[in-house]
Amino acid sequence: MDKEYEKRIKEADLVILGLIRNSQVKELLEQEKTRFVNFYRKQANLSIIAADLLYNLSTEKSSKDFHNLDAKYECFLWVINASYYSMFYAVHALLTYKGKRISSIQGIHKITAHALVYYFLKNKFIAKELYEQFVESQKQAAELFNLEDFQKKAIDLTNKYFFESDKRTKFTYETDSEVKQKHALTSLQRAKEFLNEIEKIIEK
Image (tube, rainbow, N blue to C red; front, top):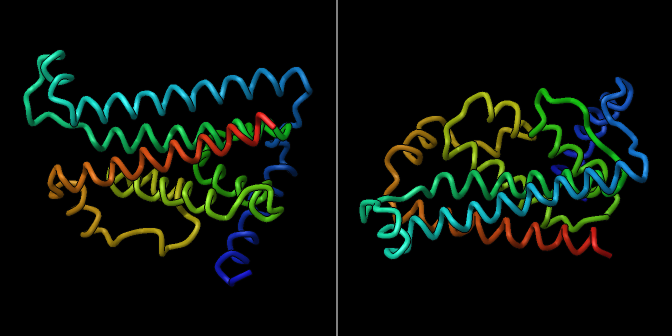
């Protein structure tokens, strides 16, 4: 295992074990597991449907005409956001499937990444690629929306996941629609693949 992954595992151990000590990771009863798994799966699927619809609305003339929108209308940033949330909810579906529910709300996006490492990556329950897809999705959502607080809370795994401030600003405000569309499509495809893999694990 390379040094970067060793570092991530140590960070995840520190965060999640701290939550466990503070009773912020709940062990679910069997009947609770089913309820929470179903809830998070539903939210993950609703988010990917929303991302799909928004992508079509941004790219299909017939959709724009139907909604009486300008031909230049696009909402690719929201495609990326909805795609990320599909992955976020999918991770929580997987956590509850394993009988764990995180009760902490503060910093939940960052905690979710650590939980993915602690419960699934270091035990080889999921492939390294799935974890990297999730982290990349978090990073992209924060960069494109330029949300400083979200960046601090959601993507604090290492500084290398951030673009410099001027690059973020340029990307968010100056990138043309064609480039945004490319990133939106990548996010959408990544989220679909991620959700599909999580669904396979849960349905085994």
